[in-house]
Each structure stands twice: as structure tokens, then as C-alpha cells.
Length: 101
Image 1 (spheres, helix red, strand yellow):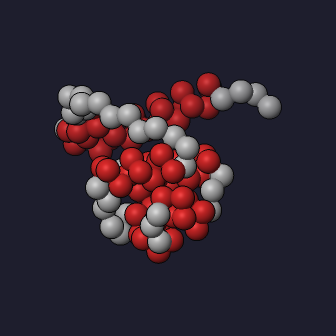
Image 2: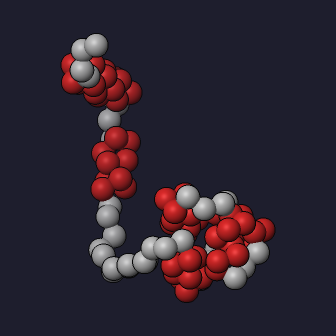
């Protein structure tokens, strides 16, 4: 998640890794490791990098969202035929909702 935040801030600011690293007082190689998820930065480091890109980082505490987990549980309970029928229904819905053109 930190990797996505840092990369998004840098790209939205139109900065190279070298420039963001310079502004934040870190090395380009360290920034590269953060963006690729190879090293997990502290929250303070993420905040410093986002700020150096010209943005503010706001965080809030929220209850975990179990939607995907519940959906996966429901899907596992379906038979293969029911799963296939669900996929066909979604494909038909997508095709009908797509703009003509």
C-alpha cells in the first residue's frame, strides 16, 4: 500500500524518482525500493515523500472491509455450473451495458 501511495504521488506531481528523492532527502535507489514494494517505509517516511511531491497524506481508522472475503466465501459455495452461469450473466450484463459504437 505504501508503494502505491508513493508512486501515485510522484506520478501525479510529474516528478522523476531522482527529483522526488532529492526533494525528500533520500536516495533514488531507496525510493525505487519503496515504489516496488521491496522495502516497507515507515508512515513518517511515506508522509515525508508525499509532502515532498506537494501533497498531504491524510489517514483515518476504519473498520475492515470484509466484502471481498465474503464474496469469495459465497463463490466457493457455488457448484461449477452455478459459477459458470454467474459468469455468463455478468458477461451478458456487460455486453448490454456497453455503448453501441
